[in-house]
Length: 61
Image (cartoon, rainbow, N blue to C red):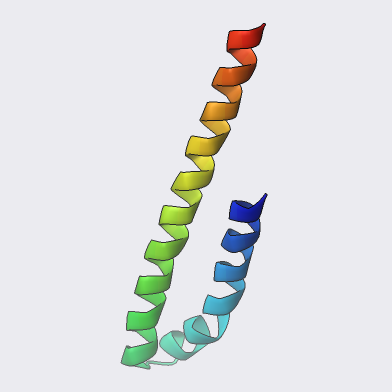
């Protein structure tokens, strides 16, 4: 669950920069792109963890 909580926190934190970037702030756009990469990496880690859990469940059945 900590990875999911991290993902939620990352999404909340990028909200203000998203608004600034939409208004034309280039520096905010750079921060958004970096944040989106962090979000992508965290989501990938969650996907991997879910696959591992699924594999464990299938192996024990």
